[in-house]
Image (cartoon, rainbow over the protein chains, first blue to last red):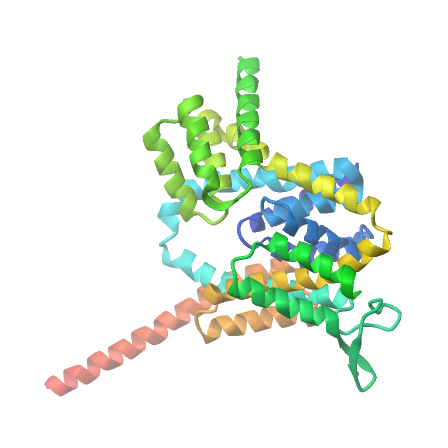
Length: 195
Length: 201
């Protein structure tokens, strides 16, 4: 019961990120998971994968998936409410004052500092997922099966097949308008073949 | 009285549940559907107001479909209306997430599924990296911004600092740096003005 409350509260704190930048939640989720022994890093990545495949905002999907992993259906509901209810309130409050505050120089100044921070955190999220899934800097004993690692001076730098997929995905997203869900499915099919 | 209000909230929830389940294209696909449901069928909002709602929803951060849903809900039944509308809109995708989660948990130990995920994880890395890149294009206006981003990344990566302190610091830094920029600009301008005055003198 306590856990459900914790879950709901955690997502209430993160609910702001449901607005464009859902991936910002990832490092917080990883930390909370490890601190509470709720889920492993690869289970978390599964949640993010499912969240990316499903229609709807990533943050909400990730919240629900995470809640389910941790505490079944009640967990999913607690997380969903935790993130969606404050969201509704924020939309209303922001909209009410929106036009008054948006052009205000102080608000612009805050956003000016805020956006690079979000960029940095999301970048860290990507690196973090790569590290935890042994795509880069793999620790012996946690190597990817049927992977091929390039090492230097006894340290594993990165796994070739995975890095190729990372780069390909990034390029496709940059150059084409293919929806992410197709790339995830495609990567899954590729995974079956090359791993 | 209370029962009537609850009935209305339920109606809102169901209406937006319907909307949420048919508009999977995302983006603007929900707009005409919302209009048909809210203006023509339910007559909750009139034509002029819905256009205003769409306009504001579009300028706010976040998905236009979700913002509009919250707004319409709010105009019909205040804050509870906004909440129920949003919950209704999101429920279909939540159902899909849960279904996929259950399915994946069942097939977790299948070797083919494991291999598939070894391909999917890197794709996720690429996806998240791209999200960062896309945000960076608008966020990194000048060198100060790039500096902030690098500091944030290092703090997260090497010092394991939580996002929320970083975000608060970023907001403060934004205000401080903007003020400094303005002071520098003012000094430069007054320097130019002084030079102009000397020339004319």
